[in-house]
Image (cartoon, rainbow, N blue to C red):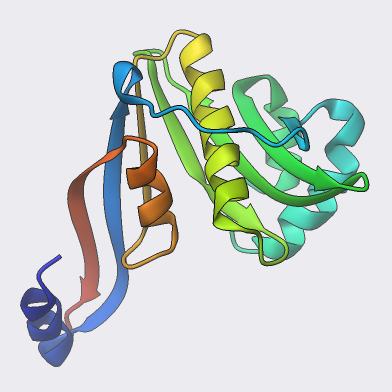
Length: 166
């Protein structure tokens, strides 16, 4: 994003949120190593996920109760150590064969190669279920940007939400 535009907006109005958007076509996924500690979340592990998810994302619309009530729609990939969830990715697949990654939640500082493996696992899963494209976004300047680019995603757009007071 052009920093001049962002600075100009910030000088006149209140910036509320900024995001970058990405897209990955099925044939462009770059192969990565996957840790044996990465796996799909099952209902057997849902209570452990629930306590972490609601604590780490208290304002998210998709809280653990809503996810549980719609569990068959969600794909949640976890990274665990000693049976404890340390990071996870939530994703959905839409009717038009497009998947969406809703972001990465990390309980602790996780090495970037582990996070890349987590994203790669999620992408492989989404594509295996028939999706031909994956979309996602992250906060402007987030660490996630490099992870997505390293896996073959292309940056497609920016989003700036700002408030004007009249």
